[in-house]
Length: 309
Image (cartoon, rainbow, N blue to C red; front, side):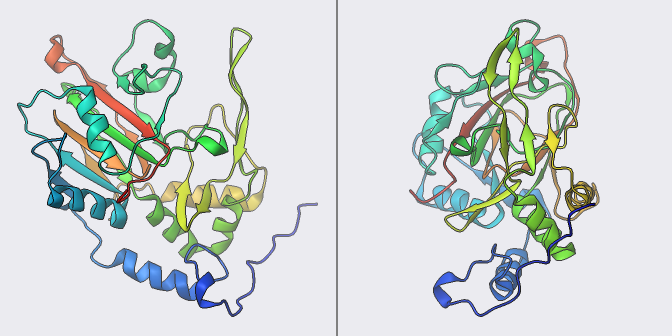
């Protein structure tokens, strides 16, 4: 017999100091946050682009705009001078000015923690989809990381776009939370369970490269909402529950291309995205014969969020 679904916690008086918009019991705080979140929400990604003159030394207005857009909408697109030659250290320095200093190092990152995303024909990286020209389904980065190593921010810098394709779609994870909670608060309750999403261990040639990891989709730490998610069907185990299946189905519907909250963008050379690890995907791309037509992006993952630090 299937376990009876529990109703969300009943409404009750909550002291002013404990009001939290992501606490299911605190509907008034949620509604206030919801109103502020949707107020003047952008419909054109051009409103989220910030030109930068020097990545090594942001002006006060550049830094404010980058941080403020990330605070409101959790991502921003930056534009460096088109002809400026960008070294990797410039990206690390730019990120540090936004409070991003703790870099997540994965199996395929280089010693500096920066991952070169390009089509790989040899080596360990060729086994992973980001290093191919194939499309990548909706996800947040590092969803397979251990709880104490969650990726809270991400930088993707375009060195060279492909001849065609390679477009990203982005969805603020707070908007996904908002839409799911509006549809049914039970969805949020189910997706916040500690065992709702399990990533099996990564074992290659009998060697465990990464242990099994279980955890929630949505979690809250220091009043900040975090999301770990992947739409891929392989190498992921979801909790066998009717409400979880329904919640995931509803989440998938949010990725409808006609949603006003979805942003489509194809990065040009010397453009990049800085985000608080929002939901995103990538379309298939096609490369040309010359180096200038072969896609190269630098990716850096952080344990920090964009902040005023």
